[in-house]
Structure formats: structure tokens, C-alpha cells
Length: 458
Ligand SMILES: Cc1ncc(COP(=O)(O)O)c(C=O)c1O
Image (cartoon, rainbow, N blue to C red; front, top):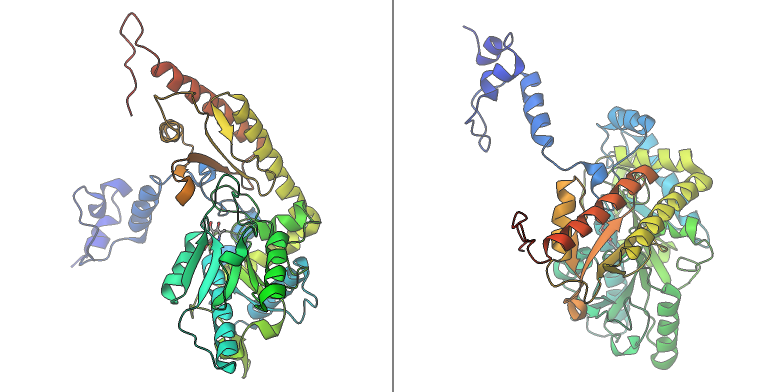
């Protein structure tokens, strides 16, 4: 008796049984199908996803070179937690951690402690957990209560911090951004910090706009608070994007371990670290800032290896890819890539600013990310959401969204320039934004006399 798979083998791919219309795909089928057929089905559905390179909404890497692709395929089976089975991968992870500690000016990069993670979210949570545990120890040692920890941050933090506070029972104290203070800048910080504050988060590269928070000013404000009240509040820098940009584009900006109050820094290897999705990093300036009782031991070459992570198993390939890029690019290569992204961002920001329809929120000179809003009085007839839809028809994903809380009545549109948005593509994008803006302006003007052009409604 032949199985359905055997009968299918000689048929052309799209004439095989599993390809026929009306198949239920949300239940496990009774029979196996040929791998070539299953491949084709998944491959074809994937075609309906957007084109990753044209997605200007995401910060996450969508391009690596052919050598990285080869390494990825070779390392797809490696589990990061199996330090015993993959000692070289473990050694490479440790080397990356030292490279980052050095890049971020840890006083002694070899004495700094840190780990790879699945991304910035996990890295931020580990930073937050270290804060919370350290605070609990200090409070208990002083005979004080530990019921009400809080974490101070901007209202424009990425959702991972809200998650951290929700999942780990910490009050999120969100300092609202405003026109005068578009980022957390230390202004009035004393009103937000108290004895239950486990730490302050400073963001290098605010997700909404790409702007840096002035870490030095935040630290100065905390120094003053300590002088006045005795409270010694540490800072975690969420450098999801900026921690892999500032060392190359703003090397003189002191935002990192040059500031002793900065206990920990996290970044996404998969953003401006230039790796495909699935890797983040967190580093503590010295071992003392990561409480020992958060660290677990896993077996490693017959001995044991300390780990601090939310997941147990996770892919090791991305860590190897991170090492590949660090090795391949060095300082000069990273600087060239980030500078090029910034040049493209500024070029686009300048071009969009000149159209007359928009006001730039920022110009892409921190991280290569910038946002703009519709100029007041330009039109009542269309919004940035309409422009976003029009651009989507041309393949570009350029999101429009409201700013947080106090500025929630402001809609902005944002472009994240990543490695791979070439000058040529940027030219095409600018031409499309120009044309679509003109189209929207034209459609929303009074109906022409011949009545042929429909007016535009949104
Ligand atoms: C400032 C900031 N923090 C944290 C994250 C979360 O990063 P991940 O997607 O790597 O978990 C992001 C993502 O955009 C971010 O911009």
C-alpha cells in the first residue's frame, strides 16, 4: 500500500494533495507530507510578510553578510546553556562580554560581569532584578521593610520596563515627558526618588524618537539627592540601540561606566550590534553589583559555570554571530557602518524637513533614528496614518503613532535607519514620501471641475 506522501512524489509541487485549497492548517494533520511540499507551503506563506529590508519601523537587524549566514547555518543546533557540550561557544560569549565591558569603559573589563540574553528585554529585566535584590539586601540589613520597591524612569520607556515592574512587583514611577523635557534629564528628580527607589533607568536611544537621555545630568541629579538625603540610587543604562552607537559616533559622550553611578548597561546585539534577532547583552561594572544569590551554577567541563538568565535553553548561534561581527568590523568597521546610517538618517530628515508639510521632532544625530509630525496648519484633511498607508502600498513600512501620555495628542512618524538602507534606497524612499505627500495634498483639495478625481476620506 502506498502512503499519500509516496503518491505525491511524482506530482508537480503545486498539484500535490497537501497544496490543495481548503486544507485546515490549525490542527495537526493525520498524515505526513513530503518535505519539499511542506517547505513550499511555509515558504509561500512567508512571501506575504513584508520585505524586512523595507521595514523602517524595526530596530532589529535584517541584513548580515554571506559569511555570517554560513556561520548561522553551521551553528543552528547550538544551545547556549550547554556550556559543557559547547565550551568554545561559552568562551566566545565570555570574550564578547569583555569586549563590551571594555567598549563601555568598565574600570577593569576583566572584572566586570555580564551575560548574553535573548534581547534587551531580558537584559533589562536582569538589570532590574539585580537592583531589586541589592535594595532588598540593604533594606533588610538596616531592619527596614521591602514591600514597596519602585523604579524611576521616563514615561517614554520601552514596554520591557513596564513588564519588568508588572512581573516582578515593582512600582513603575514614570516621569512624564513634555515639550520642555522631551527626555528624562534629571529635572525635578528628587520629587520621584525616595528610600524605596531601587534604581533609575536612563535610555540611550529613546524608542519613540531615537533621542539620547543625558545620563550625566541624571547622575548629577542623583549625586545631589545623595548629598541632600543620603540615598544612594544606582543607574541602569538601557542602551538597546545607543550602547552600540555612542561608542563609535559620540566617543566623548560620558554615558557609560565612566560614570561610577552607572551599575549596569544593556544592549540589543540584534539592533546596532548588527546581528540577526535573538541576542542581547547586560554587563555590570563590577561583580559586587550583581547579588550572588541571583546566580545559578550550571555544569561546565566537569566544573560549574555561573549563569543569570530567565530562560534555560536558548540559541547559541547569535552569540557566535555577535563575535563574528565584533571580529570582522572592529572599531573602524562599526564606526563606518554607524556613521553611514547616521548620514542616511540626516539626509532623509533634511529632505523630509524641506517638504514644508512636516516639522522634525529630531534629526537623527543621536542614533540614526528620527521622527517628525505634521506641521500645524498644513492640512486638516489627512494624517500621518494616511501617509503611512500610502507608503505601505509602495512596500515601505514607516509607522505613525502617538507619543506617550502628556504628549499623546501628538502623532509622529519615525524612520529607523539600519545597516542596509543604502543611499540609493534612501533616495527612492524620499521620492516616494515626496510623491505621496503631494498626492494626499492634491486629493484633499476641493474636487476638480471634471469630477473625475474622488476626494479622499480617512
Ligand atoms: C530603549 C529600548 N529598550 C528595550 C527594548 C527591547 O529590546 P528587545 O527587542 O531587544 O527585547 C527596545 C526595543 O526597541 C528599546 O528601544
